Image (tube, rainbow, N blue to C red; front, top):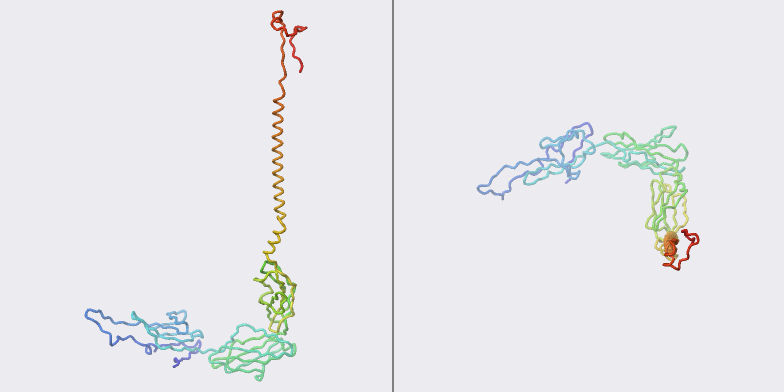
Amino acid sequence: MAPPTRYIENDEEVAELLRSLEDSGSEYEPSSSESASSGDEVSEVRPEHQVADSSNHGEYLSHNMSARLILIQQSLVLQKVTRSNSGLYSCVASNTQGETHSNEFLLRVKYAPTCKHDRVVIVGASRAESLDIPCHVDADPPARSFRWKFNNSGETLDVGSERFSSNGTFSVLRYTPVADLDYGTLSCWAENNIAVQSVPCLFQVVAAGKPYPVRNCTVGNETASSVVVWCLPGSDGGLPQIFLLEIYVGGSSSPRVNFTATDSPYFYLTDLEAEIPIRLIVYSVNSKGRSSPVVLDDFTLKDPQKRTGENTEVGTPPLLGVAGGAAVTFLLVIVIFVAKVRMSSRSESTIAAKKPPPPHISIKVAGKESDEKDPDIIPAKFGESFTPAV
């Protein structure tokens, strides 16, 4: 059985709801099988009442004057109700023994139609191209009628009802621009039993086609398994565009994988295979189709292990050889310098040891007595002391 429903008008009523919920809920009563022994304390249990919004994950509501939510004893009062107040409500009675819920009560708030999209929708069309333009609205009760208008820089025209269809929640207009004056703004209004839609849904019809291809593409920041690709965008053809990159590996005719960029043609590609030719193709895409492809030159990522092997076969790296040679040269210079110092020191010592001190000979003339004692001494002619030259 469906829960009871009550309709509340917006902004005009003070909705006093759920006043009788406690009557539909269960009340606590002792079981007929429950008994009390002598000496037991028996007390009266009075339940406390709360209101739960079942449609909002069973959250309990509390008294909130600023939100115009008033709890009075066992009743809930909602003031200035809006669409957000719609939902299922129930009353909860609880005490120390547990809690119980009343039957659910459905609150359905009526409101005038509003557009589901709060922005201008861009519709691109070529000349003589027929388009189906849908206008979706939210309304309770559902919309009973729709109307469309067209406006350009020169005039505003009503669109005949034979050019669109409606079913209560949306309307579809069949539109075909055939001249420059057919490009402009379409407006859509809905009406239900509450009111006419105050703000229409807007659609901007623009001359459009496929986007232009990207340009000046660059591949850089290569590693063993990744690269970065960036390009400059071309004209969008009058419509929002995205960018698509396809990866072809090893000469395959079908793409291995593709990537999409929404803001700009910038792609960071990872987990690529080394030593296998890779081809990249970039497209611009809008609702009218793809641009012509931009094919980047094939490239191959190098395997770092093979690079290491090649270096090992060649021998010592040049920088290491230069450093080693400089060190050896420096050591040789030090050894030669020390050797020269030692040789010079030894030479001076030898010369000093072998060179005799200059002789100093003194001859005295003392008379005959002296001559007899040392007959080998030749008497001096002049009776003077002298030092012979060496």
